[in-house]
Image 1 (cartoon, rainbow, N blue to C red):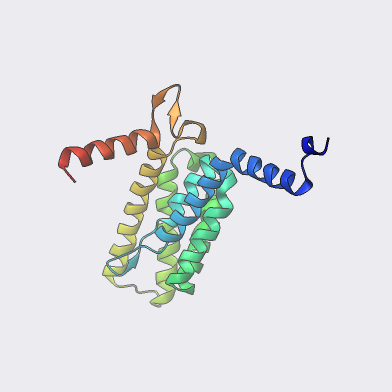
Image 2 (image 1 turned 120 degrees about the horizontal axis):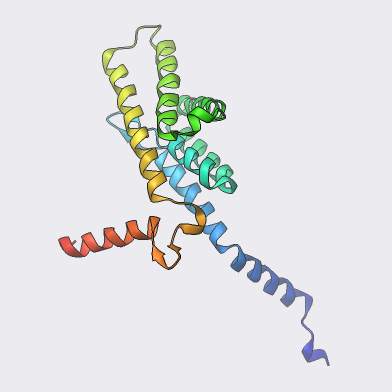
Length: 192
């Protein structure tokens, strides 16, 4: 009779393993967003911080709302590694993007909204830092950051469809699965 009963400790372990199995996709996506935002928010190109935090935030806000907290934590931690000023810039961009993206007109073109948000925040920040007269190379850097963010946002929205269609949709490869398959095919073709 005792052999048919589970002990409470074993039952707790089994229940925990089942809940982890059920939430596997959620946990994998959370780790992916946390790690990718942490590392991409630290990206520096030609002595300028590359604006990859806001495009990932826009993607998570549009398609992966449950993972916004992980994007925020990873982005702020990565920005803090670059310095307190970069973390403040990320917060200002995030605040302006959330305010602006509530209007229906700006929701139609999220890449342009991301680029515009980066331009406005960076121009204001650099005007304050250079007392109203930022050098031409700083102005060009702001423009290049906005263009890079525009393309990065567009790429993210193409590469990451809605969660249900990431790997397979109706038995066909799509989204990230198609991207990974084509990258592996090119790798084999080039002999890398």
